[in-house]
Image (tube, rainbow, N blue to C red; front, side, top):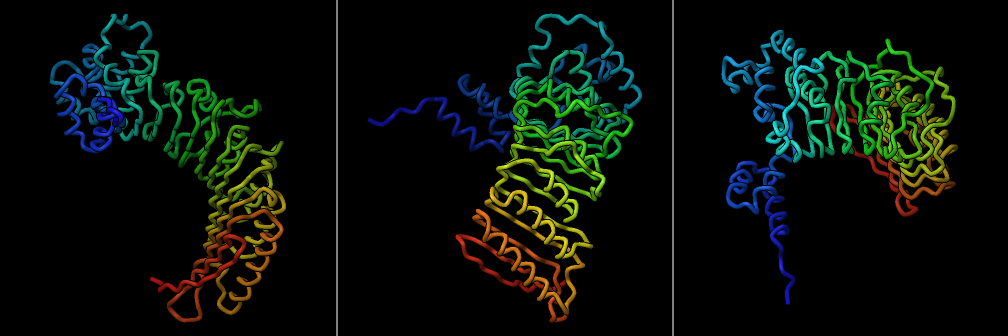
Length: 405
């Protein structure tokens, strides 16, 4: 006898197929009580704006945010231009003790907010302020079951005003270049979101007005993956804060670190996967201070107009000296102008790859791929991309000719 299908299983298949068709999900939600909750979960699973939630707020909150003289829809469309008025209303709303909340007045809002699992924030600044202030007024996060948050900071207010869900597992911050992320914010984040497993910080300067403490790493309990893409030495400070035994994957963009960086102790002792985008000298300095004894996978993207094969050789020497016995996979992409002198390029490439083969032979490496590009060929108007692969104990090498644009 065939195994019977349950309604929940059928609904799961239907909703998965209609995940991108919001209109059909909305219609399906109205066809049957059995369909309502699962379809609403699908509709509100991923949100990219706070705008739809304004209509669900208690009436007194909407009146403060949007005013009472015109309709809610009119003011939502005009909200972007109502800067001074909105700011004053938000200050009034966030004042402690401004109003005692009545039982059940947030029930309509919570009916939908609790369904949000992914919030990809792309709002204008006014909606961001509304989101933050309403959170402060409730003294709790508005989306209690949120798992993934992608937050784009475009305002000028402090990040310490955030309210983060304790259920949060993944956080991506696309930071305003003139607002720094502080150590205090990271410690607050660790307190508010103890289940956080993935943290990505992109395009940020450090806040140099804040004096950093010597309290050591931020106490994240479950953090496994860290991505830091910054424009200056802030990456060094953040590596100190986030150097936790639980972190197994790290991706960083390095500007020139300089020889002044001397961490007090080796960092990232639990690291298994490392990705570095930057120049070879900075990458070599960083690799030297990675304290993991079981680093397995390394991805290097070395892109700088001053990159030389000699610099890359020094980096590989450091990498295999410190982590050669644990390494299993290496991907190295070298893109630079200074490595490409036509008269000696063949000799330089052969020496580089020969030395790499010696390193691989004395290690436990299982797979290697090296890509050398921006190498002009002797044929005018073309350049070559050299790809060397090591798979199953066998080396292969090929040259790809491409026309220059």
